[in-house]
Amino acid sequence: MLDTNVCLDLLLFKDPSTANLAQALNDGSCHAYRSAATSEEWRRVIGYTLWGLSAQRQEELAAAFAESMLDFAMPADVDPALPRCRDKDDQKFLELAAAVPVTALISKDRDLLKLAKPCRRRGLFAVLSPAQWSGMPPAAIDKLEAELVQRRRSRAIAGF
Image 1 (tube, rainbow, N blue to C red):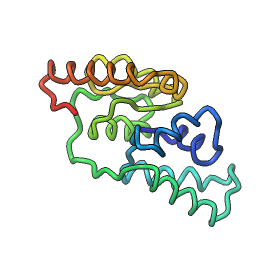
Image 2: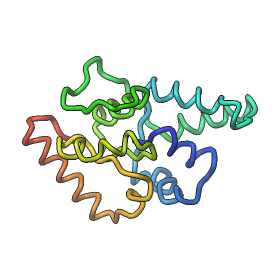
Image 3: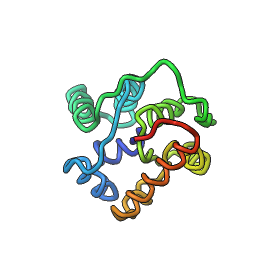
Image 4: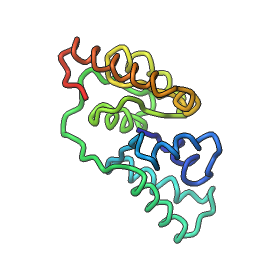
């Protein structure tokens, strides 16, 4: 699961710090998800005049976003264990990450990163910066997944 800032680095700026993430998405060793709400936010953000993107480039980026992510239809109810984000516009990322469920929400957003401990403690998912995720060897990701499964079981939440 990726937030909008990470998607900007990945798809618009082609930031070298996201190269490992791009490779993992391309080779299928990592999956990212989108919902109607995150797709809507992506379209809104790439339309900012700040970027100076033509309509054609915005359409290319919208298509790249859709191709990079698996579509997920959100359920009507939200996990009651889900923490509330200070920035209510970022809550959609937490809700999507919990609903899928994913191993990690990769974010550059300070408000989301502040929720890393409660999300992990509750067995929901890890909230990691792109650098933290890129620095994790596959064995550490496997260990994280096992930890989350165990925490979910202890809370009687369906796991992966």
